[in-house]
Length: 435
Ligand code: PMP
Image (tube, rainbow, N blue to C red; front, side):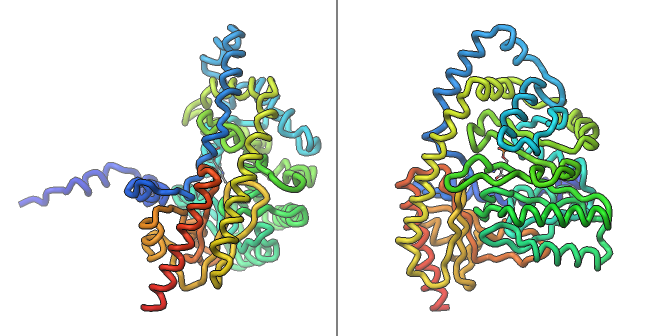
């Protein structure tokens, strides 16, 4: 009798090798677990604040657009693969108004449906199986999934309150050379401001050292890029803005790829992101983008063009910042209130962005198969297990870490969530003692 293929083996055989590499993304599992527990306070999702979504501003922008029939008609048609030209020009004028040395020409800007799509484009265009990307430990776990999806290696470098440690980066580079893999190193990925998940911001001195190290590498070993992900750059609550990497050195435009997005600072529903790439990479990236969609949604781009042009964005940003500052403060206050007495528990205090990085005593396993997760979900609170955010090589994953987001909850929800997590930590710690 012939073996009858099971539905699992049948469907598996239908998928590509690349699809197999992409399986097991934590985000889907986390969402499913969240749905299994109603009345849950989620400090996990990177969603933005519902209360300050720009409903009135978008209503005014859409009305403005409706009153410009020519522009409206144009916005309902395809644009070019790189996106609406007028918007690309307006975007560089606006985004680099305080950083004239970093200002690129608009031909170097490619508009995408959010910056995640741009990261994906970079992975597709620049990475072969076995190629290496260096990132902070911890780093943006969705990007780690993309690297896995193209068979690339991710090597993690020690990070602290000031972002990726440059001495540790230098040692990692030396190790890559010593292992004979110098030609496989393609890029260093960094979220310069208010990192997801670490909440840290790369200091000016570290930015300068990073640029110098890459310049040196390029002289000695050949091409190396920096993927500078600026997703949270505009969400600064305290202190002065730091220069973007291309502002630091005139030649940085040859090797820094900057990524930006309006998702966090305006609306992820509109989903407009962009990348600024060295001249030499533009044509090939556009070829690949042509295969994907030959241009991201034009209507969204025109909405954002009008949002910038009308001043709606600049008026709305302070409203968002005020909301997030209050929620960041609510989270830090609640942590102080409920967790300062817990031995071995500490957290970073972000000056912007959406995340607080929490470290627990080493014996507490915060992964979603651990005891803490069980207690937390039973108490009705959800977090992102920090272990997901560690690149598979380099710094070993720390299962005793947690990413907390104050993005979507109210101040009250944030405080309640922290109370529930602190209870779960006590329960898990007590259970551990009895083991
Ligand atoms: N980079 C980082 C570091 C992020 O946290 C996110 C969103 N969570 C993105 C990029 C992508 O955002 P979007 O695609 O909505 O622009």
